[in-house]
Image 1: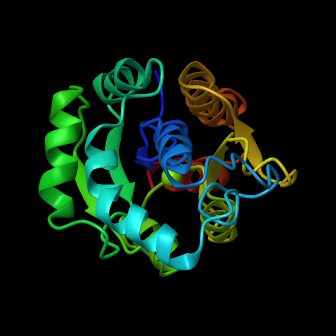
Image 2: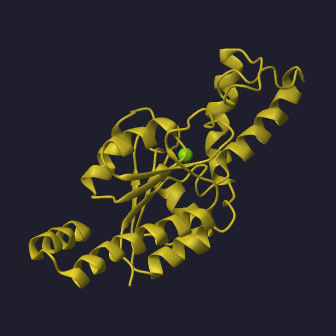
Length: 225
Ligand SMILES: [Mg+2]
């Protein structure tokens, strides 16, 4: 017996290998420009890793991001573990910040990509990645119990709302040590399964001792929420 959850899952860097492909594309384009290579390894790819001018950046990024997003691959085992979580009765909400003006038809593009890799889900929600609070708001609105994202900002906001928030590890979010960090889909699956077992155990233990019916009733109610 496992407790069922509504699980929110980000796409880029959680299901897709976005940063890996983006970096490859930037390195390739950099060769065509001046072949300077990486000038700052301590910042994110789009925030000064290369010596490109704003015009060079804009010209490459906005003319290629849609093609790049369509070409992404899945992170190891993501489709398999998402399917397993769904088969076990959890609801899968894919929540991605792709409604941000960078894609001509973000819903169609995303649905096609999810279908291509046979990712099973119950609902797709696209937010604007440039609105720092929208994802957390959508989690609350949709009664999400667990959210997985690689953005420190988003996971901090979600965490503040009392939702279980898991930060997917990337080379660019390691300065954060106060959030629950996960590294791969096996670990995510095990975390959710353990959380579910713990919740059920609390309810069963209370039932066994049956010291206080009201307490049990309360726990039972909150576990259904
Ligand atoms: Mg992401």
